[in-house]
Length: 386
Image (tube, rainbow, N blue to C red):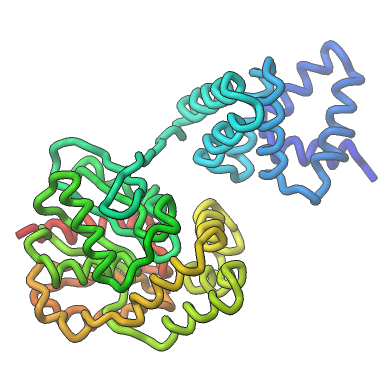
């Protein structure tokens, strides 16, 4: 086995041009260390497929941050982690995790190094949500602030406000964007269980009240879109516009079946069926941040919260009342959406004056796979402001 050839291949994949420069500089002083770096570190240890390149870089960063005093190596491996598929949010979470085990000084040093590297690479765009208290539970809420018109984004069943991560920066120039974790999901997991769409809709109204917002543009995806419809029927005066994304207004037997499957099989068994409904095969094959994030959310969900969402959809009645929605509405469908296909969502054109568009090649979780196209579609829909 040619460990030199394997080592150079692995080094180039992980460190790019910087790796060759590092080895060249080391060899000027010690040919032995340079050779073992290639043959042992990269040609033997790093090349083993028992840990992915991304996992190895995250482990390496954790150890470098823990030992301290390795800032040059830390910077190299921060860049390498991003190159092999680690996400900026994962690197920040790594520093947060380190605080539990190695203490705040080392964790803060790691966090500062991470921020510096991300800033210099133009990858530093953190979105943070603070604790937010509603009547009977606590959640987390993101608020971009400012005095622009308010746009509230309501997430899908099983996920949390972070599903809008790539969409939000594309909207903040025009809107004060608000996003929060629905009752039962994300930071609001294990809250008192929702008893139908009305409870979720009342929570949405309570968010507006607590923020002192009389009217807002409201956009929801999947369960979020059904919640937005419900509030539009209950309190149309709270809306400037309504944007319904990849959502249903009609109940299907499958909704109760999904709740029952979680009760019988647990949440791990819901990962496969959920992700194959939400994403395209290519998305799953790449296994980028969006897929990893969605998988983790499903696995972490409480069965009772998951069931509450599906049972709420199983009892949805807005499909028979669409003509009563007196709010400027825009419908957005994904061309490749197997859950709420365009032909289903066309039925929502029963909302008086509603418009509709289809995002090409988009699956159900449009916010995670097509954030740019979705943001532009939301902007077009909110231009209908009454």
